Length: 179
Image 1 (tube, rainbow, N blue to C red):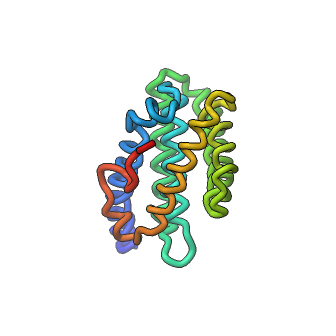
Image 2 (tube, helix red, strand yellow):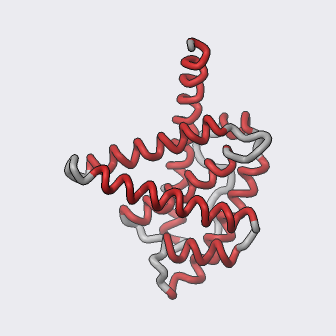
């Protein structure tokens, strides 16, 4: 019991640092300028969700993954979304409905992004990104292609990291935004 509590406390600090790196990466202005992601609440939410998915899929990898840390990171994301919704003034009765939509979006995108990344399917990933991040706007197809290339590089860099290296990550994720 005491060991579980200590392990949870250690994981929590690591996850806080890792979530901070994910958040900092998703806020990089280059996503909004170079990749033409809308600088709106929805655009920021989509980028944050994308980066959480990338880290969670790495943590859940069979063999050397850390599923407990993946679960804690996912919980941190949902707690942050709950807090953000409340800060935006959404009424208490509407929060569970919003959280259900966020949950469905997260797990749906996780599945689609994970499949495309595992298959190294840039086209499929670009289609998913265009649908989810760019609201299926045809004029953003080129930006979705570029973003898909960046996401595949980020996923590869994360996949190449050991869990201790990933746990020590702070500041931002390993691949900097570049076009």
